[in-house]
Image 1: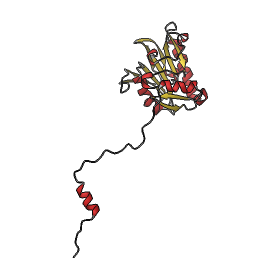
Image 2: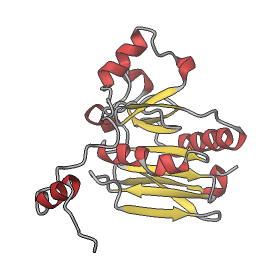
Image 3: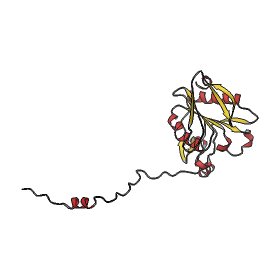
Image 4: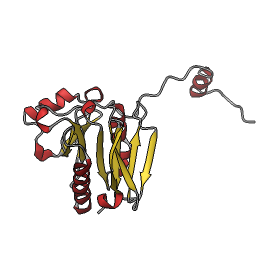
Length: 213
């Protein structure tokens, strides 16, 4: 006849029955996030240069991909279309220049930005509060532009965010920024006109076909 015996392991396991389970440790170490000031000082010290093609988003440094033909065309056409429509006495349009989002530890470089005032007004980079509209041209970076960048822009209070979506061939317009992103999104397709809204006022419209390569 076989007899069941209690092994030390079994006894130990039984003794732990009903005991609280300690919380699991994080799977990965916590990320270190840079501040805007640290990021700028790395540039001043020559640690990062324009040749590195990087940008700061939510405290993390991301390498910017090479811009290929369709992306470059859409970026140029978007900037040109906005320049034609934006009131020159009150705003200017710039391409791939940094926008400081201090509270979010961000220094992204949007493909196109509309900035209040005149270019000569800014001896330092414009802050998010100076930018009523910006646009990203998205192909390979679509998930990033709809994700991390969108959240950073929304949390920085950018009122209007455009994604010129080369994958789905549409322009996505996001409004109503808040801590969880943009609650309002309107898609415009070829044949549609996209309203250009600056500080709550529509200043013009641009055809989607003008922006897509």
